[in-house]
Length: 311
Image (cartoon, helix red, strand yellow):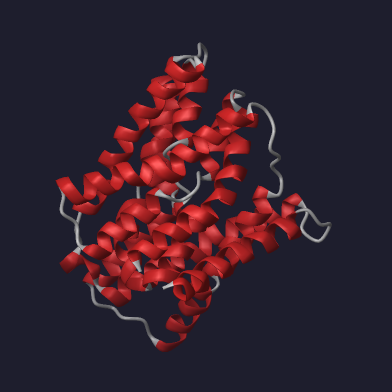
């Protein structure tokens, strides 16, 4: 069991560490890191999800309870984190929203896909895909709204709705999943040359995503209110997966694989969107960045424990 966990954790976080080193060197300036990140999110990840749908034909066995369990558990965590931020730290408005987001918004693409794929293969990507298709859309819309409620002159309800609509039609994950399902229903298959191209792009996802994540994290420094950022990271790594596990197991009775995927996904460190939204509103920026660094480092331990439990 230990050997299995190490065979997953060491390569995953080893590649992230290499990305951090690369991101702090002159070989990978910010423009290069942004380009790699765009390749991962707009080309490699969509290719991997498209291939997974075409190969596994998931429509017959697609279980939407996976999404219901994950999102219900996450909404419970959202409310709890907002209450914690206000009660324990006296946070208000945008700060409270950023704290709550950092406590329950997972890095599903750059880290979740590599870990789930390395652990469970394409079979594990099917329930993960149910979660991540609308992950950023749902939660970023919620947090834009929460920020706007406490800030005069923000984008407002109409602006938030417009941003949500744009996100739907331009989100590469949603587009890839939609095309994959249509392709699968039409039973078009993948002719030799097309299959080779898709395979090459999909196979590049894992190393490129992990290296890109490390290179992006290299820009961040631990600063600001470190104890508060640590609490936020701990809530994300420990409390969020516990809440999602209980909801998924006791309310929805998910299968062993589905339960493992939703729990591990909830245990992922915070996603970069936490920092980006905080930065866009100019609140909680240092603490949001610190929580991502602390959470990613702490994830080595917490994810190792969780993987040993489920594998």
